Length: 53
Image (cartoon, rainbow, N blue to C red; front, top):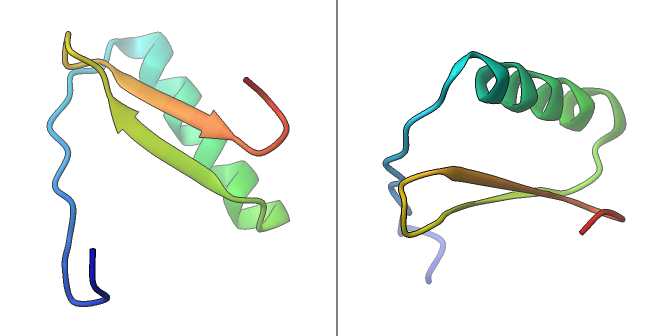
């Protein structure tokens, strides 16, 4: 992917997953540690944080 390309992710979230996403984004904002997002085959958002698997 080049710097002018954008990945578009479509996924569904329940209340707990919204909280997890919000917490992950707040952690990214506070620490600057990388967080990566994927969507699985069931359209569920997967959050990968540095140092956790």
